[in-house]
Length: 259
Ligand SMILES: Nc1ncnc2c1ncn2[C@@H]1O[C@H](COP(=O)(O)OP(=O)(O)OP(=O)(O)O)[C@@H](O)[C@H]1O
Image (cartoon, rainbow, N blue to C red; front, side, top):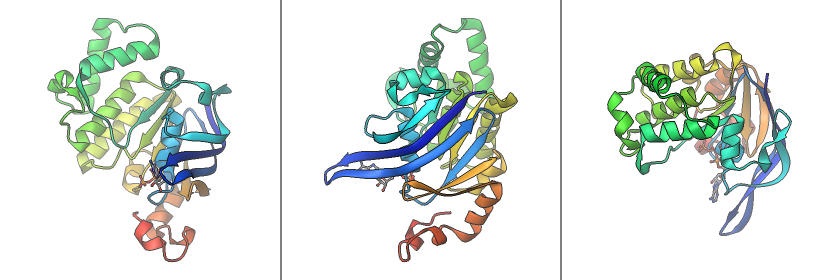
């Protein structure tokens, strides 16, 4: 079993108005085999946590720690984090003109594993994963995310997840922009990656509909850069019914509540 441990994490960014603290003491422990959902109003810091785990240089860690099996993740470069077994499915996947999906997947897999995958098995694995995610084979020769629809980009994030087989996956609103069929297909992909308890998942979402397919054992409510409440799956149902009003200051609640 592997453990990703986040302890009292404080993160800020530089803005034109000066330094702004976004995460104000987040603690979270995820083991492989576990699924944790993070919910919370817009702007509460969910994506900031995801980007900080992945190592985005914009986010300044002021204090606290992130460790993977005791190893200091914050000391690792972005590629070292990927090799250590961390994966981020981005909220807004980026386009990479001039790089085909096929080339990207094989190059990334080689970098993560430290050796090139055997060509015959790799081709078979890519084909099988694409079929299961209902991705047209023509996409292999298209440039990464270029001209992809929102839903197609999200499917390709999960294609990477399945092929790279990380220890921990952070899924940042992977469900947004998916139609009902795609939501099910993408969720099945995540569940396949989790089979046998080999992966831990941190699922950031605004909607309980994805939690019907990917079932979290733990739900954490983020409000203003902190975990305001934690519980089991029933907490997500309660949020869907009640929104975030009880967590938010009077007056700020209505606009910020999206669930
Ligand atoms: N470059 C920036 N300049 C100013 N503020 C920023 C910048 N990047 C992030 N923030 C602010 O940090 C806060 C947290 O943003 P973050 O994207 O982490 O929230 P979130 O919980 O993921 O929101 P959402 O649910 O809308 O995706 C927001 O108030 C956001 O405006």
